[in-house]
Length: 486
Image (cartoon, rainbow, N blue to C red):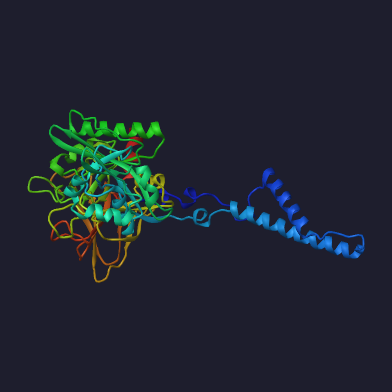
């Protein structure tokens, strides 16, 4: 989610002066042009004999000079073409990019090779992908027993790998009477699947910690090397400690790294209070496609969406700190489990749509840090806009066959009447392809959730409907006011 004034296409785009006729010619290039022109001149100027008349010789020379000039023009043109600006880059404008920041491969507990996983997302029209195996970054040489691969994904795993990439790419060996196959590192396979403006691989990791017997998982995207979990006395302290480790690598390497907290209800490991107190964290999974992460909560625990609202209310009302932005991922482990077959974690169940000018790790992650994205399980928004001056949140939904859409606007309010509900309250509801909400100024924040009448492509639970979540807006002026008051 973003405010109109929070980004500028002009600021992000590379400046290009259309009046510039071409690049500056260097002395080396000029000398090359002179050599080429003389070569053309010698080629086209006919040799003169004593019997040739002066007029004929003059004509021949003039013809040769014309040819030389023509050759020189070709050289200049070639130089200009070689150094000309790329219109696709020079005139780039913000657009929506679809991506997933949480998925697994055979490098940890997934059931397919990393390049096969990447190929799945590219084939299904994703624009970017982060592979996030547990406490490891895919680097160096690593071999895995073929029987282990088959045990995880089935008899067809190696066969389909060979069919896709061929025997010249797939490396196999027998060691100590055990058939092994090599897992390719990130920097080796990325060149096979990446394409400028089409598909981007982002190096990632799922930092997998445990605190007081409870799981705590944080994804780090665009890392340089693996970041090991550091623990803590409490869950909130461990979140902060692991995020500081991420920050340390970002500062040391000069990389743009984004961390987001995964599936907070997994093992009931993270509470709303933990999320609120861990103020270094700015992103949390509001949807995770793994069927075992307690997405909807239970009688004793709130759903992840409700937990998100509780944490953001505490942050804004009590701690005067920015809210969490909501991420959707599929957390895929099982690429060879057929749809509707068993309780598996399959690809394509959740993703983010990020608005950025260029498909690069830096631009994608900076846009997410600014809140210029929404989360989805199957709904596409063609417009998602918050205007700072009018304080109006508006969005437009892309039609989807016979599906109908309901947009609910959700808000939380400051402490007041102790009896009045104030957290995650529905303040507006609109049916149709366009919706907007006018903030009153009393809200701590407002967000929108769009629900389709149709299920997503691969539901996690039987009654699930496709949804999209925008980011909370309308909160910046409150933090600015609180800062001034202090």
